[in-house]
Image (cartoon, rainbow, N blue to C red; front, side, top):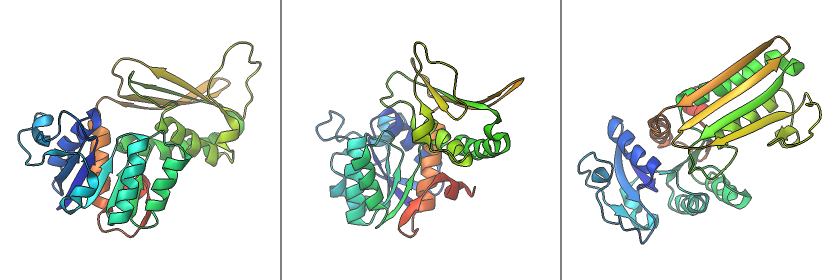
Length: 266
């Protein structure tokens, strides 16, 4: 049985992760963390998400509960993720990272951790999204330079980064399949007299509003036809189940960087 620790346990994703752990036959909740000073400190994690007592109460410092978990799942904030990566590396704990919007220094902390412990990092842990990445790669290779490519993503009003990490991952897969550098060809907004669209560009459009969990569509638009590959999430549970699956798979692995392709055997 793999014991899992969760950072940001009181947040929307944290509570869903607690539920997903309880559903998984190979996992158990070992520790739950929230920012120090939170009014929820000491609250039972199971009661927090309406599942009854889990026997694990919210704590504030990951380093003070290292004996309670084998793998740490982090869906918190870029700043907290960098700190969690350092603790994982120092303590020999495996790490699952789902936080997006990391800057170069924060990503570097995750990269350094992967030199010492197994790390699974993904922009999106849903099975459907990771399958769609494989489909996008195939579509891009077949269609080549005969299409215009646009990526549209929508999320809830609270999401901090844009475009989403998933949208960027989709753009990266498509760009690599076409032999392009995404940093050079990405267009993140259009306004005014933009002129004709350059074929090699990959466009991104971002929508924020309401409680949208996550919608992503990649359009391959040609003259006379258009192929769209879409994924729509109706619940965070899709992400949480994938993250827990990754945590169980990651336990006992050699140090290094892993992704959902390895976890799912894609």
